[in-house]
Image 1 (cartoon, rainbow, N blue to C red):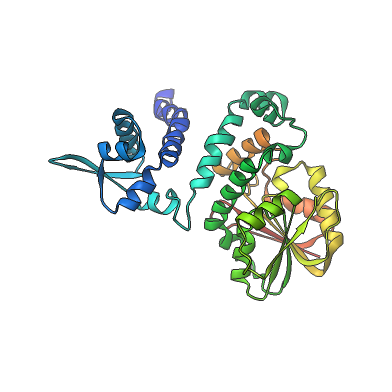
Image 2: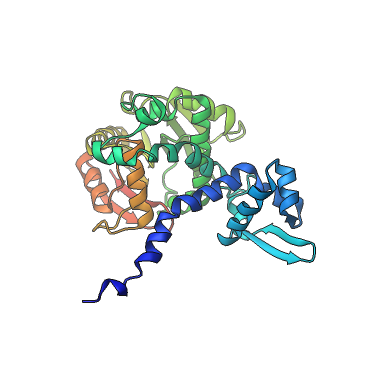
Length: 346
């Protein structure tokens, strides 16, 4: 057996302990508009110019830009006049607001909401419950009541979710051939990005977004355009209200919010409403069967502890929940991206 000197502990510990610093550098550069400014300028800029345009200190901006270079979010060219900074391809695609694949809104949601809850991770582990009460002074009994505590917070959350589906939506919807399903309900469909991907990928389908009345109102006003005639809305609470009949139900990042009993309750209602031959598509980040990874999913599961009543699960665990509700012929597809797909048929 090797000694501890054989293990590169210092490097690992430094890397993991600096994770918070890394993300805050990226969040801050997004929030200040560094990447947007550099995209709009069309040419590299000095730290002085960037600081002047964005109204920051020159010393603070210079250090922020240097850190972004180290993270490969910016590139630097040293000239006789000094250092000039420009975006890398990664930041142009994912960190500028105007990009179709922008993750800006998700960055801001993490920075201003998720990270505040994570400050109480120790308490979450001790108590086994979400931390909205400690973080925002709001009752933790209703996670989505806390999450949607204001229209501003609701918009942040939905914009963040939409940005995720801009890079992962098509992968999960194309994991199985869903073209035979023409009448689809997206339960908890939120900002509508997945519904839009669905009607784009399957032109013969119509998708109804089923969500809380206040969510539907915001989505209609802010996210869904009137000309998208194949997207409809149904206002309701799927735990307490009836679920209309349909051929396919999509539950994207829904079951991971709830404990097993709540998941069984919801899936039983879905099974009862589902047309014979229809099905349910679960979109979730799947843990390995031995729960050894992926790391991203393990971290998401910690976030479920801090923010919701649920957890991330293995494919077998989701299959068991589907079987308990009556669904059979269960198929699992890993996409290689952040989210995977599980299809159960009635």
